Length: 327
Image (cartoon, rainbow, N blue to C red; front, side):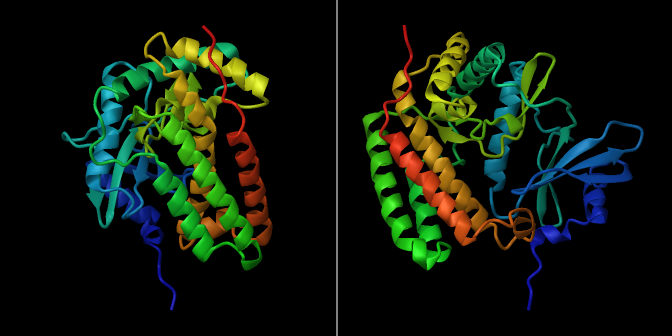
């Protein structure tokens, strides 16, 4: 007997009824946008600009955790930072309809920033410095932190016990044990680590470049984490290229916020944790029909072999000296 996934109840009729429950009049246009963790739609509104509706995955975040995400966005918007924050309707930003919590956002255009442009990196650094100044002003109370326990140990346990093929299990278990031990050493060396509120998923897909500036979207993964979490994902290419990129970003960043160079040692740790957590994220969502459809390569012997190879590369990267800042 098959079980209907909650998201399968998000029919166009249900979605429009949810939006109209807030007093809007939909014009019948409902376009699904590229989102898997939640469900996001562009909704046509009569005699007005379309809206973006985000229906949160049931049982992922609590109401309090979602409202902390919204509040962070409102704080940034109040300081005239270019973020796409939820719309407020009758004093509320989070709404309920049926079994779903949802939020509405204005539609914004733009394109991904060009990270090979040093001027763009400097601008991104300045923006992140401003975001982190506000992020450091007070902590999240309900949202969790990015840490080795949840992103590393829990991910490895899930994959080892339920997903890794038997012929790869020994290799995977040995490798992840070595990785976790080394990452914990790096984490300890960097103590005390100052955790602040960060975007958490600061890649180019979550930025819209318009009016010569980045507009940050989708704070769904905002957590407490070291500042470097929002910086390392902007680095790419060979070491020399990453070194030059880092210097440009931090030059802009330090116009608004201090940066502790000791956190650079966490770059490869955070990259490794992201790789491990990503695999576990897809695994945890495998019962959602959207995942087998959009990730058909997942959970094959080839996928897990390539995943192990990627983690082996990270084991070597963790043993290399970190990038440096120069006075």
